[in-house]
Length: 631
Image 1: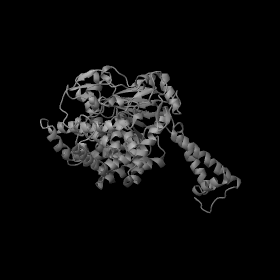
Image 2 (image 1 turned 60 degrees about the vertical axis):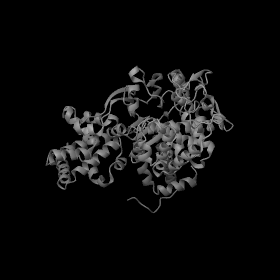
Image 3 (image 1 turned 90 degrees about the vertical axis):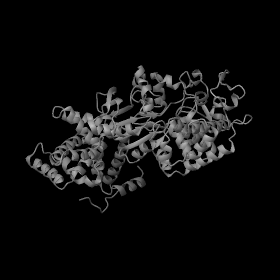
Image 4 (image 1 turned 180 degrees about the vertical axis):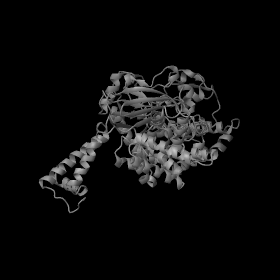
């Protein structure tokens, strides 16, 4: 190692004794079990379900409680104790109403919470454990967790005195809340959200607010619904029109008006004049849909490299016969012949009134402080894909040809495929944030609904679903990836493309709801690929037959939790209801994965190598101990 670098390291580690200390700490840390990772996808604004899953850590807390207290507590008592961990403040208030003196109850539950916290802390070194404890209570909680009343009388007396004093000075409730926070922090070390916060459910803004204050490390793989909202926040008018249409279509305008302060009244007023026979929200959906189709057509025409010509529809309408010529060469009867805002010779041109409406809406999107806080967070934590601990995470697909080869696309004069295509997409999404040029804003819309988009991977049929009754026209062509993912060789080829071990790694994606009720499995290609879109959103429950998936990756392997029913806060407090889940082992290891086996472990090993080089320099006299002494 160069002397210059060694001297810089010596500023951080000024004596060989400090080097000894850090080497011992880092080397021993490598042998601890890896932290638990949780993977979720396609939340689609379903805040209530997500909030409960986050609180009970996808059922992991209940498993730990059962591990500790089976045989000591009844199932009802364990359920009530779990509810206390999930919702401590609410449960304590409930108990205050039910009984006057909570001293004994507080003492019992403080002791039980300490047992759970101790069990879950064993995979963390003490130095890291302190970071998980709420700061105001850190010193006392460390004392409680490091005493051993079960093996020594003096320790038991000391431990009892600590808890007794906590209750005596009326801080028992606060310490219970602090311990529940600690337990939840210990349960999940990293959370992966594999795309799609927005649309369908009504509170994606609340989900993002929750995550921005969440304790664990988080990474996000952008979904096509996320990209659409990101494009809208950046000022893409076609993205804005699509966002508003989706919100109106799914009946969740609350996120626009309450969440982000976007006023729909001018649109609704305009729509009621144009479509006087419709209900106000339906009229608004019709009006913004027509604006969207026009803006989409303009966007497609100025970007031939998007290969979206099949979605040019307004120019194919025969207004005299109310028929449309579709891409299959057939003529179809349309549901309606009423198109009051379309100019027959210029079908993609906005009327002056439409221009005013979309300009007004654009100002709300680009000026919403709340929306832009979430936009910044999505850019900070997100990306097109993530390689983490040997696994490859992305929302939708890596575009393929029917023979399994990587699909070659061309943008800005560059031929792209596989990893370099996804890298290009990531770069261009970030460029849109900084430059906000029209062609990059257009690219955001392409990513939302383009067949060759790796974040969508299908050709949308919004026009056909809106105007054509024949459901055969609604079928959406999809990338071959979604069928080929069943092939183990294809999955290994993709993993290798991204520099991962094809034998040990896994592909984890969402985007396509898994129809569990119809017998479809989320586990593909002998476990090489796992599709974790299980339908968190209530709108998908009939389609999937379940309430979502959580994939859990701990030191013993991969496990998929299939959530059958998710209790809300009210149900949890009333009858201690919880998530009803079915667990399926994806991959069980006969060894424990340690920190040394992880990406974090690789960084630790690099630091260890540097410290050994520095220690050698101290021992050889190349670097002198500073006057500072740790003794």
